Image (cartoon, rainbow, N blue to C red; front, side):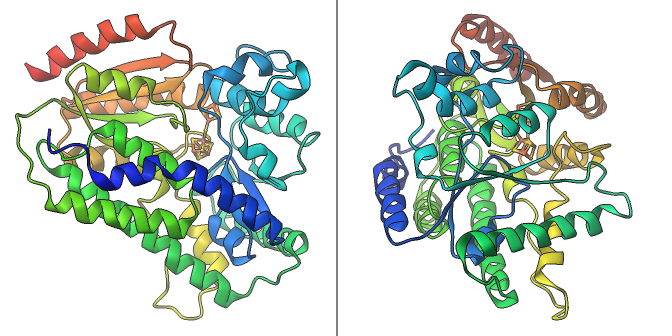
Length: 389
Ligand code: BJ8
């Protein structure tokens, strides 16, 4: 690879404490802080209401055992880790809890997978939790109307919650800014098309995780600096197997499989996930059609997110094919969290599509613990050998 360390990557790494202080300051000023768990909750509406937001998805193993005192052990670790952050104090008096939960006035959740939906019912006992109901068949004729109606209700809830009116002008401004972030992420991803890329996949993942934590303005500033720096870097080095990850999100604190892939000689060049392209690939229509209501434009864009909670979700396979070509992918690691039925079942469709394209695939189903690291390393070694031959 190349001239590591990139200076601007360190600025991402150093941003944690500053952001916590910033959120505390904003609360003192009377700003409301919203916690979210999913891409289907549009940031544009939150920011147009003058609120701030942090994503609460847990990626750390430390809080899983606390959640298991309340939730079945056989659900996805992302849900357990998130819920464990809330209940760890109550059940054990241990400050393993994620500090973000203390900063949040309200959670805005969504009806995606069953595990999350039911966890939100319990979460509401600790933090007021508002749930947006999602249609499950985004291509059906009524889906857009229904989701648009839900966003209208969410907008009214945010107005009550903040005491601020959300105007069309405010929504248009936030759409423009969110699109700016998405375009910057496209620019950043474009740099990964080089062979070898100038930034490791693990570092890209950490940047993407920060997208959900930093304020959008600060995130854009740091990302712009990073793109400027990476564009200047000369890339030297040999070809390494170009790996794409597809599947469940890797929430902040979880880089386990990405670390293994890159320690074993691969380089990750794209992630089809919510800590990857699903968060930014499509833009909200800013409208040649000046009469288009901004809430409609938001609903149209967000309904396109190819999450496995949707059916039949053919868009996801098409998107994977597009990424394989764009990033010149040698092999795909299909990454799932244990008990994530949606992504585990969709593996079959993805595998079939890849077979037709002669792209090798390795499926890894795991949790947040280290117990299977050795076994994953062995399988990744064999996979690297296959894609290199
Ligand atoms: S849009 S992927 S962020 S729902 S991994 S909790 S699905 S059992 S996180 Fe997700 Fe929104 Fe979809 Fe993205 Fe359930 Fe699966 Fe766990 Fe998951």
